[in-house]
Amino acid sequence: MTQKLSTHTHNGHRKRLRNLIDVAGLESLSDVQVVEQILTMTNARKDTNVIAHKLLNEFGSISNILDADPYDLMQVEGVGEITAKTISYLPQLFELYLKDKSSKKFSCKTYNDVFNFFTQIFNSYQTECVVIGYVCKNNTFSGYKKIAEGELCEVKINKLELSKNIIRNKAKSIMIAHNHPFGKASPSAEDYDANAKLSTLLENLGIVLLDNVIIGDDGLFSFKHNLLFPKEDL
Image 1 (cartoon, helix red, strand yellow):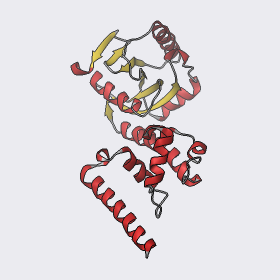
Image 2 (cartoon, one colour):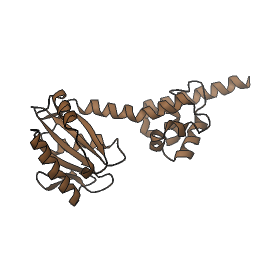
Image 3 (cartoon, rainbow, N blue to C red):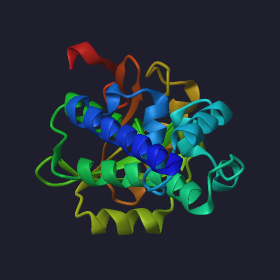
């Protein structure tokens, strides 16, 4: 009798959570409730509230949980191998979603378009990284590829791989962007030096570089124009 009452209460909690999501969306949930909902994907008949609390106590935030190594997740009581691996797959799934969505004829006719395109990509990264956007004849992005994590000056381009990707994406030109997470779009001396080297390399490869840009909290910096395009002015 006790087991039936517990199961009924548990099912009622999940239904209330689903109803809340339907009405107000995931953003209306607390961190614990979001983690609970994630855990239900692999725990159909288990109370996930306690596990959610344990995960947040151990890792501190939802993003830290999603970025954690599966082995570390499995050290939390109640988290098995399947759950740990499923959680670790989610950031990769989000990245694939954003990559697919951003390649759907996203315009790059203005710097507002460019800022929006790269911002949605960089939102999925916690660290500084460098991305190439492939541009088609009708001035739309046909796709993108992250080529490095770290600073622009650390980028080493694989010439053959770059050429293959340009052909695969039917691009006539490319645009390079890197982010300054939680910082301004102001370039460093190393950024200027790296931009010059990249421009020379791409020119020698016969690849048209439309621009090299930095995405920061205050807007977009264009190496081509040596100007900052503030977000409010785009």
